[in-house]
Image (cartoon, rainbow, N blue to C red):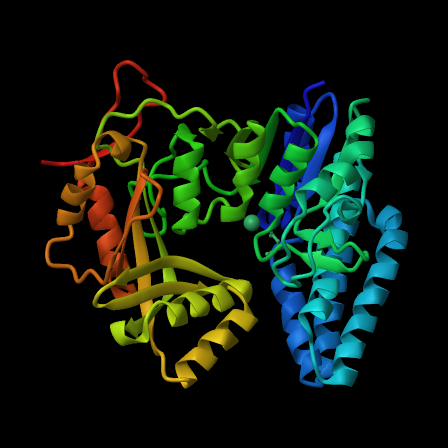
Amino acid sequence: MSLKVLKFGGSSIGDAEALRRAAAIVRTELPAGGLVVVSALRGTTDSILGACTAAGQGDLASAQAVLEAIRSRHQDLAAELGHLQEVRPEWEPLFGRLEQVLTGMAMLGESTPRGRDGALAIGETLSAHLAARCFGGEFHEVRDVMKTDSRFGKARPQLGAIRHAAAPWLAALAKGPLWVTQGFLGSTPDGVTTTLGRGGSDTTATLLGEALNAEEVQIWTDVDGVLTADPSLVRGARPIPQMSLSEAEALSAFGAKVLHADSLAPGGRAGFRLVVANTLRPGASRTEILPVPPTRAAGTVTSVAYKEGIYLLRFPASAGLEPPMEAARSLEEAGALRFGLIASPAGTLLAVRPETHPAAEVLGTLAASGVICEAGWAVVALVGEGLRADPVAALRHLAALGHEPVGGLLTGSSTVSIAFLVPESRLGELIPRLHDRCVDCRDPSDGSAGLGLRLQP
Ligand code: ASP
Ligand code: MG
């Protein structure tokens, strides 16, 4: 049996119209059953986090006001869709639980990562119950399968345990039912709720795809697949019909928002097809991410990515290697992303982006201890299989920057990307310039897959 896993993000199930659209997609894509993963309704995760913060500061009244807003939004939506009676008994204990968690936080005057994960889980669980009703499927609890360690806030999936726990799902799904489950959530070996980090439900979908031997995983979002650049900065950005897993990895590592960086590894290991499609235009172009790279002309760039909010830590040569390595380790442990670690005889440069509150705290401690720590940087990356065959092209591409200040050149073991640091304030001008200096270059031997960009001479 060939299983398909579909994932809908918060904006794809944000209101009644969106949920009806999603239901139509489920009917089309999964006529013979399959698995659907959903995240919380748009904005819910942020609201719950806000409630936790208020509760942790002892402001239970504000926290409760948020809870009431979440409750009425969900109930209004369910009523509009005609499913309120069915979901009410499933939801009531969840609202009760959220109230308990928030009250506990307010009493302790503290919202711990563990407590926050417990609260956040409610957003995903509410929406999964409603989505199950809308799609005519059966709700199943993802925490039964998604086994993680106990790094609350950004838990690491335990692949062996997940595969083991997924065995009953594999057997049951082979019979062709339609199941709906939560994204983003996991549980420790002791059964305590964890989350995979913000935006983690793509990763849920691909990890389940791997554990369930899926043939295809579809990520449904609100753009026409993976684009050649961020459309909010580049008007001419366009979808990439097919791309390699390495390109997708480089792109998401360097900031393309459409796919979560952690979500790609399962496809690499399991070899399923990963598809990114647009809920608003299901028939429009989509991106297929394939384990075997499509042909690209030498020197072409497939996409331009960037990530803002980068901090640069500068260590003098006299400090040696141990302090920067130790800083990188503790920051990553706390949930920061590392964009570069360049050690030279002139000193060591570490580029990181704190993704979690604990990571920001570690950064603050380092700065307080005298480490030079500069905010306001961004990383820009050119990505393409074409760079493998013509690495010098990357330098020509770089030349397009002219006299732009470049804070560092980041080349890693990946040969499909080249990245550099620029001041955040320059992104708005720089990204369109880089993208627009590139032209279409279709490889005649492969019409669909040959979309690439090449710098104009
Ligand atoms: N609801 C979670 C978030 O907002 C997970 C996700 O959307 O993927 O981060
Ligand atoms: Mg998302």
